[in-house]
Image (cartoon, rainbow, N blue to C red; front, side):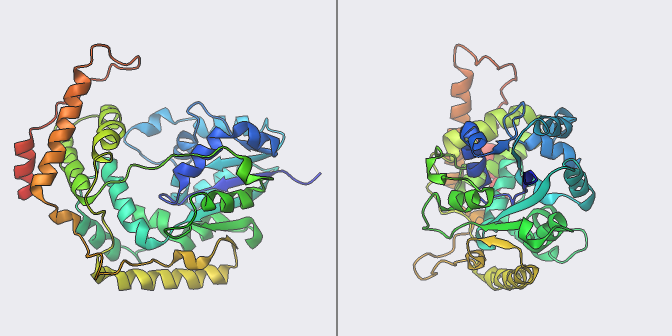
Length: 369
């Protein structure tokens, strides 16, 4: 009998990981029939286990995560088949954390999988995601930080999880190249399930089309909506709003129910003046990835950004979004929160007090400067 595998899907963030993990979650029994155990946990996903093994601070969530990596490993050791671990924050692991993860499976053949999307889409997506996690920084300062810290010895959070050659070198250290897999995210316009089929090829699934699909997507915001959320985050920070009510009422509530649902403004993209620099970084990465000779599923050319035609799609700066539209979104967010507070029967797990939304006029005045 061949040695069992442990497949470590370690990111990157914003590369279709939520979609893939939701599809895995919906098909646990079918995966088991294919000889693969997507390890069950108390939350259903591997975030707590990943956070625990990384030892990273995460707004207090790391306290609840203590011991969850060992719990995941204990469950995995009861499996008779191959084991799959998947969470995108693992991309930021330092060598000591990687060593602990791999040492947790001494009897398994270790495989590392990295899903990767072109840097042109990753840059604005990561900025938006940080704002959805209480970030207050505008787009221009975010871009300046990326450029200033690209080549530093201690990478900033963005480059720690998005620098593809570095992540693969850290996780693949000492592994044969054929056990290090890079799955490229297809370019815009490709079939929706192509990423799943590429991922399934690495997993060795017998019939990927037989697996139940997923309609999971991350809430996408336009420039107006991101700016509105930044203002809400500024006010929430001033009020010292704890993480739990923010997650419940802002990130999982008004972001999805109001801002994303009503988003009509142009999304953030890489500014035209920065696109040559992004192209140079990508070319550097492609040279390194070809030299590494890792197993590529898809096409390395998928990692080249496809820039919009400025003559038909002019660049829109999210930092200069129309203040009237921004104020309108904040008003809609405040109305939604008031509507939730007016519900006669709270949800069973309620008990966290609603945040008091700042007034629209004060937020609009602050945003104007």
